[in-house]
Image (cartoon, rainbow, N blue to C red; front, side):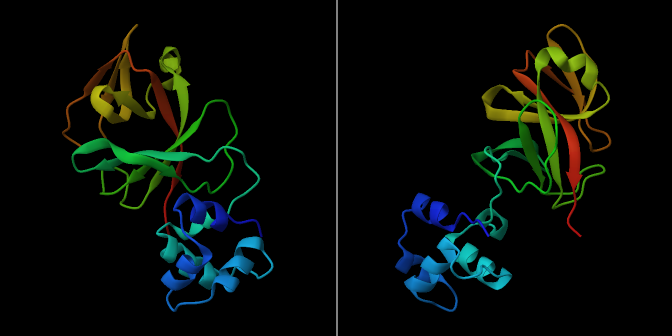
Length: 190
């Protein structure tokens, strides 16, 4: 199984011994090395132990042959959509076909039809494609590193109007968005 243990360990500037020591219960650097190289099978138990030692989600340790990893860019909180302090790798449950970059939105509190723990997968489009995105849930960048998320209810030459998913919320108008990402997939944990 191809894994990303070595890449993540090196990004965090940790040695094999550091990771082995952080595992609960502790293990040896030689065992971590064998798991990295695939000479020892990476079981679910080992994946969870190593992920905890590295401070990442276990799913991030396993990689496919895909070149570009989608990123979590924003999250939806009770205060609205906001930027994450730093983008982080998102979990790609299946390949989505199409043009444009994939983005993921983490739902942290129940809002409208969305539940806490949901992931909304969106495909990025140029702002001039807004007409074909009407009545779809979209994520739109706003000034100051903020975002608007909700149903796109109107557009004109330079503005889009977004209706947030919670009932009773006022529409948000965004002037000249750099891009618009339309929802393509909802991932809901069981």
